[in-house]
Picture 1 (cartoon, one colour):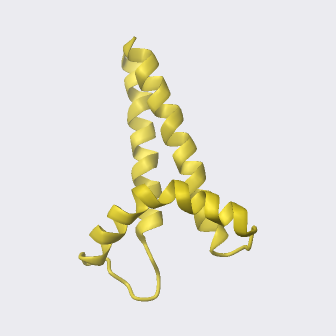
Picture 2 (cartoon, rainbow, N blue to C red):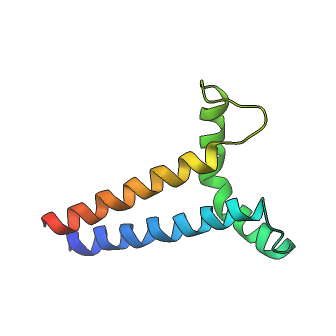
Length: 89
């Protein structure tokens, strides 16, 4: 049972990585209004707390929003932790 939960969490983190990556690519390439709205709806709940943390930290830059990049790194490491737990169990 534990393996299934960890495996589902791993898949969840991978899907979130792809959505955040698509959100980041949209800032460079226009993919259409519907795709932008869809990714914004999915990313906003996890991106807004990260933006608040970055806003009050040393990494606050006025020209670049670093929160999607930091979120991508956190999701990557969370996925790797899930993979490690699957190998251990």
